[in-house]
Length: 345
Ligand SMILES: Cc1cc2nc3c(=O)[nH]c(=O)nc-3n(C[C@H](O)[C@H](O)[C@H](O)COP(=O)(O)O)c2cc1C
Image (tube, rainbow, N blue to C red; front, side):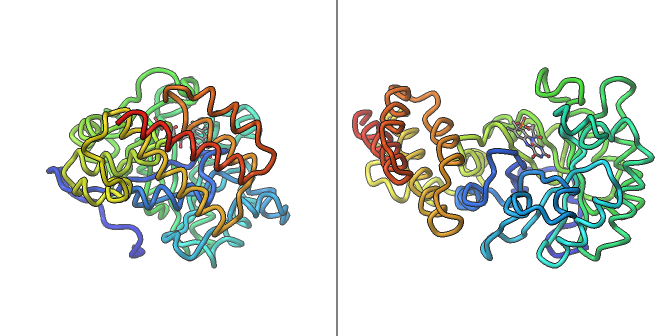
C-alpha cells in the first residue's frame, strides 16, 4: 500500500478520520481544491475527465488534470467505456499522479450512453476487467468510486467492492445512491456499512454528509475509513473545518477564518457566515492568481454558490455582473461579503 492510503481502520470510536472533497465536475477546479485543503479537507480529487480525450492528448482535457506541488496527494479521476483508452490515460497520468481514481458513479446520459460511469455497475464483469487491466498496466495505486448499483436490478456495490479488492484496487468509495436515483432520495449508508465489513481495503462513505451531525451519524453507522463531501462543500469549503471542530478533531481558534477575524465571537451567526465566506472567497481568488489565474467561468459559478442563501445575495450578483474585468468581479463579491460581515455584527 502507498503511504497515501492508510490501512483500513477498525470501528469508529470518535477519532479523526480523513475528510474528502468529492470530485465535482464544474466545481472542483485546482484553486478550489487547494482552498478546500486550507479549510480542513484532507484529500481532494480532480473532476472526472474523459479517458478517450486524454489518450488522444486533447488539450482541454489535460487542463482539467492540472495540479500544484502543494496538492498532495494528487488524485486525477478518469472515466470512460473503452478499457484500452482508460488504461492508456492511466499510463499517461501515472508519473504525475499519486493515485488514479476511476469513476463508476456518473449518472449523466452523455457518460452512461457510452457505457461509462455508473452504467458500468450494470456490466460488472466489464468493470472488473477494466480495473484489473489498469492495475496491471500502472504502478500507481488505483482507487474506484461507485454507486450502489444501477437501480434496475439488485444493488451490487458490495460484490463489486469484493471483486475490485481481489484485482488490486487499493481504496473504494461508495456514493449511497443508485444510477436511477441520480441525486434524489436519501443516501443508503447500510450498504456502505456492509461493504466496510466485507473488504479489507479502506472504504470511504459518500452521500448526504453536510455538517458535523451528519458526519458523526455516517461514521457511527458505517465505520468508514473516511467521509466524502460533495454538495455540502459547494460554495461552503469551510464545511470541512466546521465538521472537524464539531467533532472535536480541531480547535475553533485554528480555523483560518476565525484566526483572521478579530471580533469573531461578537459576530451574529449570519455575521460569522459572511466572515467565513469572505475569507474563503479571498483565498479562492488568491489561489487562482497563484496557480491557473482567475478564470471567468469558474469564478462566476463559485460566486453564485458562495453568496447563495445570504441576505442581499441577488444584489451582489448584479454588482458582480456590472463589472467588466475578472478582478473587478472578484472584488465586488469580496466587498459584498465584507459589508455583510460588518452589517451583521
Ligand atoms: C455538480 C456535481 C458534479 C459532480 N461531478 C462528479 C465527478 O466529476 N466525479 C464523480 O465521481 N462524482 C461527481 N459528482 C458526485 C459527487 O462526487 C458525490 O458523489 C455526490 O454529490 C454525492 O455526495 P453528496 O451527497 O455529498 O453531494 C458530482 C456531483 C455534483 C453535484
